[in-house]
Length: 353
Image (cartoon, rainbow, N blue to C red; front, side, top):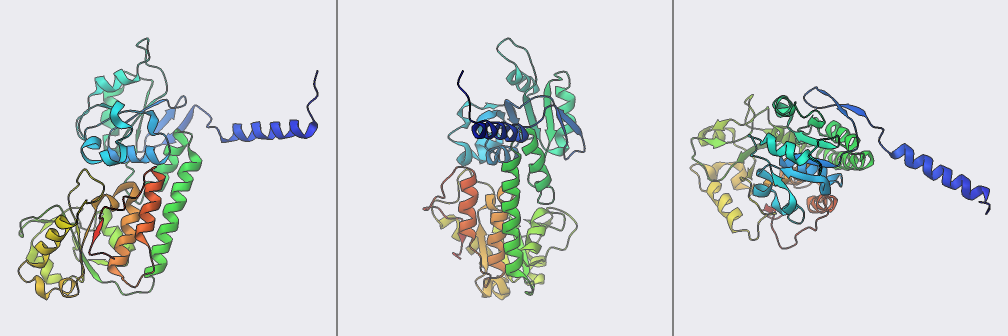
């Protein structure tokens, strides 16, 4: 019998011990954003994501190959992130109505049985509904995670990392976000807060413009980027008229157009049209933002969800041009986490910064 050198045996034991320490200990229990205590019985083998934010979070944690189903919002609005992998995903409904029978079918094995190992991720406000409809299928795990709100994102990624046995990847992402936020905070520290108006949607009627109030995540982004939101309304998405915006004399205007199923713009024409629309409005020539050439258009996907810290960095430079930041590099890093290359030929913000 061959003898194993003591040092080699010790190394092998250490390796095995570390490997066991890194592995998740199932069953495990997590608390989701709906306040539900969810027990995960076994390692996850299949995932159904009921919104694009969940799909992006799973992607960042390196588990995209486990996704078997999603809603139609992902191919409609986020195909550029998943074009290489989503061909095999089943569509299990729309963003507001889910096909529960199809979800259950995806959980079945070759014998038609539903065992542990299937995870469904939905928004927190949908968790009770999903649980009620999938209740008869007890082995399906349901977790309510929003994965777009900056206030809860770190905790949610930690929980998802634990569920998927990807805790170190979740920690890496959270550390990266914290680092980029700290860079922004340092860059705008001690500066005066310019008045900022953020407008969503496409070209709209001047009497009913879609914007962001105090209850929105973009209001928080304005503040973190060193600005002050001119829309002082305790709502998330109030409609306002152009006259009320003029009265606030914004120093920076940021236009966040509606989602399009492309990664940025292939040319800047559409972006220039949106800027011209704002600059040509009645009274716009007297607004400081127009006078100083500080009316911006930015790719919507950088401002919300998993990549919102990219938008935060862009906004900090818009609001404080003197800030020493590199938002393009931050975006490159984010896309790198997703396994994607930065498209050099595309446009994400106008005017150029």
